[in-house]
Image (cartoon, rainbow, N blue to C red; front, side, top):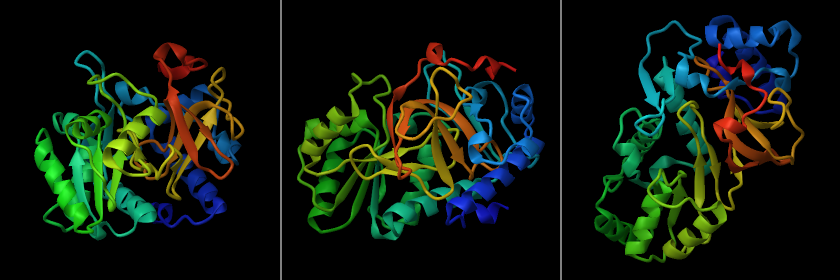
Length: 324
C-alpha cells in the first residue's frame, strides 16, 4: 500500500489510494475512529475524497494520533511559547518521511546534488524535535557538497559564502525563516543570479508580522532576486507544498489541499472560495492523512493554492466535536 502512495499519477489514482488509506486509518487509528464515529461516518458510506472526515489539527496537541502499533522512531514537536501546548507527531516509519520530502523536492527542483544547501533556521535549531530541521539536515547531507550547512547567528560568514558561491555560478538553495532572512539583508544587500531564496514562514515573535506581498518585496529587493520561494509544511505533516513565487503553492502528487466552509467545518467548498485549509497527506499513512488545519486559504481550479491567514482558536466554528 505504501509503495502506491508515491506512484500516484492521475486523479483517479489519488482517489483510490486516499480511500484505501482512509479505510486503514479508520480501522487502526483510535482517535480518528472516535472522531468518525461521532460524525456517524463509516468507510462503507464514503465513495469520494471530499466525503472523508478531516481530523482537526488540535488533536495532535492532546492525543497520540497513530494508525500503527510499530515502535515510534521519531517524535516531531511544533514550535510554541513556553506556556502553550505543542503538537506532537509520532512517526513509526521515518523512511516514509524521508521518501516523501526527497521525492517532493526532486519533483519541484530536480536533483538535490545540483545544489549547495544553506540553512538559516535559528529558532528551529534552538529547540528539539523540529521536522523542518530534520528534513533540511538530510537535504544538506544528500547534496554531497562540503559547502552546504546550517548557520545560526554567524550572518557575516553566511553573507560571504552566499556571495562567493553565487559569483562562481553555483546553484544555491538558501532556506530561511523570515525574520532571519530580514536580519541578513539588513546587514548586507545582495545581487544574486544563481540562488533560490526559500522562506519557511513566520516571525516567531521576533519581528512585526508582515503580509506576504510586503515581506517578499523586501526580500526580493534585499537579495536582488525576482521571486521568493516558499515551503508549506508543518509538524503534523510528512509532505510539503512549494511555491516558486507570488505565494502560489503546488503539492506533490500524493498531497492535496481542499477548503472547508468557515461557518460549517464539515462542508467542503468549491474552488476559488476562501476557507479553512484541509490537507490530505497520504505520506501520513501511520498517523492521520486527513487534517483540518488552522490556516485560511484558497484553492484554484488548477489545484494550486494560496495561504491567506490563520484562524484564532476562537474563530473555529462547527468543531464542537474536537474534544473527545
